[in-house]
Image (cartoon, rainbow, N blue to C red; front, side, top):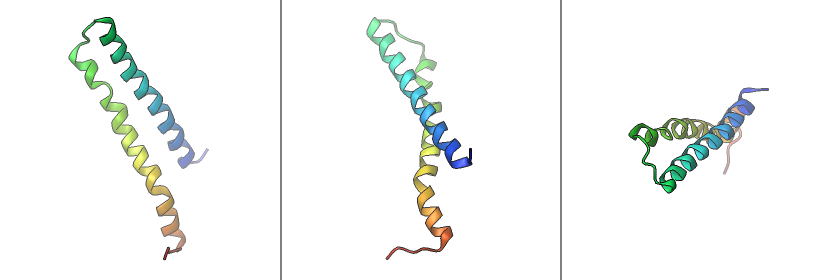
Length: 73
C-alpha cells in the first residue's frame, strides 16, 4: 500500500472517529448529563488531523500535474 492510499484510509477513519465523538457529546447532552469541559475539546484532535490529511489529498492532483510538467491553459 503506497503513501497516498494510506493517507486516504487514515482520512476516512479519522472522519468516523470525529463523527462518533461529536455524536457521543450530543447524546450525553440529550440525556441531560453535562460532560466535563475536556470532553468538548476531544473533537479538536481528529478535526486537526482531518484538516492536514484533507489539504494533502486536495493538493495531490495539482502536485502530480506540476511534477509531470503538464500545464493547464
